[in-house]
Length: 193
Image (cartoon, rainbow, N blue to C red; front, top):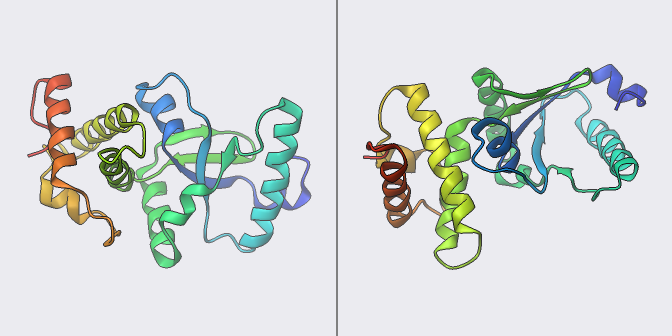
């Protein structure tokens, strides 16, 4: 990134991240991840140019390291758009959980509540066999624990359901029951009530 004059002018670039990178670097409930998912600061002055230059820098790093070109990608951006993306970004920055900080880039954890709702929705698709349920369950329990530590109380099911913007794929009661049971098994106390 330091080679690009345009990216240097914008540095440090701020991103938010969710998924495996957070599980590995914050929670330690996974030993590795395939990639780093991110959303670039949606309020950058020239966002399209920044995205293009960043993509070039990512591909150059992938070539140098001999790894896949999608080792870091913006695939999570499809889950929030427009003003919702800007709000999510601001709230994630305010949460101030820094995953990585370098000379030209700072990566923050996405807002915990948003991350939990995404995991719960994915876990709901696991019931149908679409995803790896063990990883998503472990991530959901870790996120639940972090939010409880932040808020100081067990999470209410109806409150969790209200966190999602996705009206087409609601959080299933069965999934909340599964995460609540695993939380009790792991921590010996109620996490979701």
